[in-house]
Length: 405
Ligand code: LMR
Image (cartoon, rainbow, N blue to C red; front, side, top):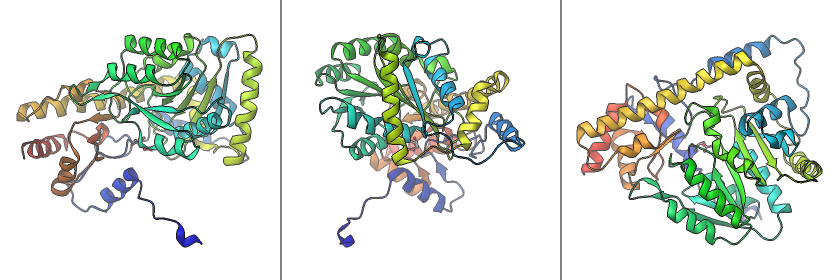
């Protein structure tokens, strides 16, 4: 009977968020979930999103009908151009199919479900160690076996590139390799362009299938094209690949669940028909799971992506967010260095994107929570956007204290 269902643990990240909310200490600091905050620790509605919202609210033609199964076409086609580049040969040659999804999570899941059903053989998916915790359960739920490749070096607090290459070249041929397109979560450590080139070579030799998870385009560097470089390079190299794309962070549309799944086939005479068949199967998966995706976030994103002036304003908003985070990286590193906190802290400014992998251990993390009301994930990850000019010194001093204990 139903009483045989075992108790599952609470989601660590959402559990942390609930604990933070319940804490009544006025000095509490939230460095948990990866969501942007302004300098007053408040969620930030992007000014360009406010404008789009205004346009939508005043549109007399707007209704609440269903979107098509694949979602809002003006959104998905603009989203493909955003990640692949407007002049991408893959788009020109009609080698891309795109479905709107329940943001990045839904895109990873749709891709996983599709690969589980159609990828020949019984492939294993390889994740970076560590990776976004949800990757594990999403792929487990679609019964794809999981393995990891080394990624983060505890010594350098940077990329363990040799370990990564060795594991990927040692994986059975035609494995699925999950890669973070930019601003790796949780480490904030990305391969350089030269390293991406080497990785592409290895993946090609082994006929591996790259699965890009792209949740931070424009958020990492403030430059949309730069943050898409790795994906575009792999497409240029003729890979068949897929991309999970989220607009949660870069448009600040967390609750609207606006995202896309893109499948790109390699160049070839039958590419266009292949992509049509893939799209037909993805549509069945989508219909059986969500029927059709939610409209609102996609409408907001579509307006911004398809209008030159709004797009420019979005780029400015992106620079505001990435710029404030970079300023906080400098401030935190400088404070720790001023305090003479034992250890090296260059990694805080070397790492990019939403997160820093501080190197603090679980005991230190728990201590920070207990004595200083600072909330971060047990692996020592901090969401940089949780820091601001009012709390960065408080945080640095608390870190200094636990490191010395
Ligand atoms: C995070 O890692 O904090 C974000 O990507 C939020 C999430 O859904 O886990």
